[in-house]
Length: 197
Image (cartoon, rainbow, N blue to C red; front, side, top):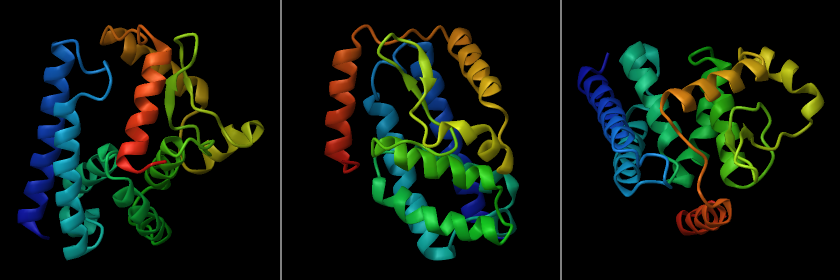
């Protein structure tokens, strides 16, 4: 087991969550993509890129469960590094096919890439505010069979997931953006700037 990398991944995750918690306490976490949060996500993502070049995907067998979970969270949060997420998708698919990671982890990344590219997702893992200010699943490809696809990869029913997200928003006193039009323009500009579009 690569102990240095294991410890580093865990510390990177802890830093991510500490900054998130601080911004949450200040009431600014959900007011756009906060510059401090983005900075942590980019730094962590770049380091994860180096780790992957050195040892491949840091799965549980290589770095232990806690660090492997941390690596997945770091990858999910590296949204300002589209190429990292796109490059990691076939790697995670291979890891999934060989039994090193759970299928839902690959599915989250698959959907996340589609979401940021503005395309319909497949497994219903990505949520966003709609025009009326409600938190809803991002558009879904072949919506009729979404529950079957979710069950196949170990995800709970959509209704359960929606309730979990609504509870999380309420617990953290998160309100929809004051101007959806402004938010959508900012999101579009950011997607273009970092290379999603």
